[in-house]
Image (tube, rainbow, N blue to C red):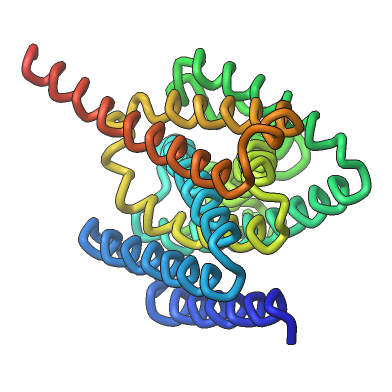
Length: 316
């Protein structure tokens, strides 16, 4: 077996065991996950990703290892922004807390499937048409500037979204959660789709939108399909525990969006100027620089958000 085949095999085994544990032990029906439990699960997912980072460094070398870590941190930070939209959707449809784990699990499993499809398509496009990377670069710069100037997710109303209106037009949507069911029967014995069904569809759709940012971003860090697949999936697997950990902190990281936006612009510019950058900076140094920029921007935006919140609290 080649090194890549060994790494993919280990990755597949780790993901399979992780999902079995998650489905079998961490996803009990109607179970309410506390902040303490969410913290332990988040720590477990991060530890698992860091363990894989060490393994991939040993098997594939320093460059691929650092690319994986950079991609994972990029995807992880984008996941936090993703989660804040998830929280708005849950609040808007008044999802009961006991239904959170199951709905999130289904949404995340759907996200994994869509990510694999998008990554496969993206890798195939870049392999055949290398100039697609320049389009990704322009897109990331545009998205980054737009994200930096935006007011945040507070203006997003799930009930006004095009996806919800489309579902209302095409399907009989009920106003109840069906006591945890996705489809119920009305008095005429006709199927009616519950609000939980709508939430699952919205979660999957929102992740597709976020994937349009995250996949080009990680491709700006590395063109290795191994890095792109593994960093994305590891970040997605930790989404659910992050949701329970951060659901009370929606307003505590107000400037995280700006930090992510700067990273997207940086990666976009790097993709556009890759030819000239390669003349002056070697690949290993570029990977290390990307990692440092991602860490600085994400940690800086989080710390600045906490500082501003403390300032406002002291004034109040």
